[in-house]
Image (cartoon, rainbow, N blue to C red; front, side, top):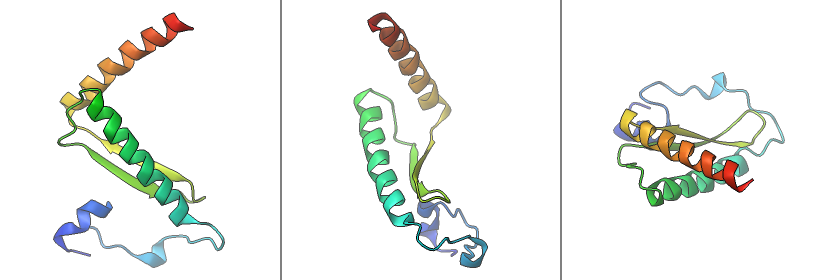
Length: 98
């Protein structure tokens, strides 16, 4: 898997060895991945709506060993600081509302 597009799938130049992965019969990994894909889209939309510069952000959908979905977020340092500031402001607002 040394094709230029492999990075988009999270392999980042490493050879994918399907025998190195534990596949459990009956676990629906695709359902978890689909859920994570939708969640990643929602998160990307929310970050954009909040004004976070996500031009260099990477959102990757995956599924865990038990089949549940997981989203990995990679941001530039500047975007991470923007997101941290927004989270702190939201936390103060939530505390006031509660």
